[in-house]
Image (cartoon, rainbow, N blue to C red; front, side):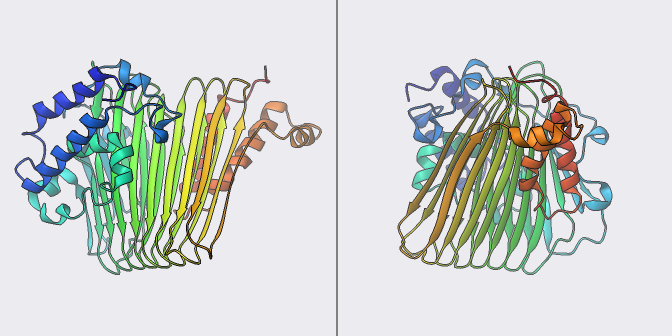
Length: 451
């Protein structure tokens, strides 16, 4: 086990799996049992990642090492009618709620949803129709890079109990967004849960999924999520995620996306909650003409730590990717951006762009930015960059000279800085909700002067 890992913490998760293996959903399915056993074996071998693992060089899991988490039970009581929603009922086709990783409510808010949309929970699917899942779960997480660098995804594979399952059949277009609310509800003891999501869009299908991760209460919990996404020929998925976990939460999310010919993945992440969070997204542009938009924003204060790690592999000709992440970091918070675009030998005439920008509002705030390009083809167009700075003092002076108070002027500049990543979101009604969320965060952050 690596020296950087805590043997007690890693072994406790292995022991929890040993106690739960026969009661986990699908325990009687040979293929799933093998998948789980492989996952826990990989996790036991790798342990919790530390700075000696290149992909985790800037993120330490000390909070996870210091807290003894127990598996989340099914008894968490939450008033589902009072949960915050990003989209009004009139703008949502379905709303699905998970509490501590388990499905609690699946509401079809409109009766005229098209046939060919299969939506539900993983635990139910494993009980009633497990065969289609055998070819999908773990499909993209078993490559050499994932096996060596994603021990927490391996733990998720072993411990997964529930999660979203969405399949949109050939040629079906889901007109309204599907909103998925993930609730972390702390209990008397710190709890851990490992939701696993599966999204499959068949050829020509279209859908929008909005994830909203929230925490209730101030207690500690560990949300270790995994998502497998497959987008077939000509299909389009708009996938938006808002991470607003509780102040003592640890949020780790690993997403694998595979795109076929002429498919589109439009992804966005807004990260503002949790004591420690890591969003790891791995995209494979496997089909000619496939396209990926991967954008996001993060807002940190106090001693929060946020890690955005992305890999985009151009595997086929004429593929394109565009990636822009912007962040605002205050107090003693720390951000990490690691982005790698790899253009493989057969991916001629591909186009890749990557950009990271961060504003430091305090002289104690910190960001580690590591943009990378690996190019093995000779007919490509690629660029990458990273900038870090303070607010533009000339722009601040311009606003103040026109009678705008300093605190309000700072808010205007920060909001404009972050808005660029949000304005291109296609889901109707989501942009105002996200801008309101930014405004709420700014109200508690920038009304002071710099030390």
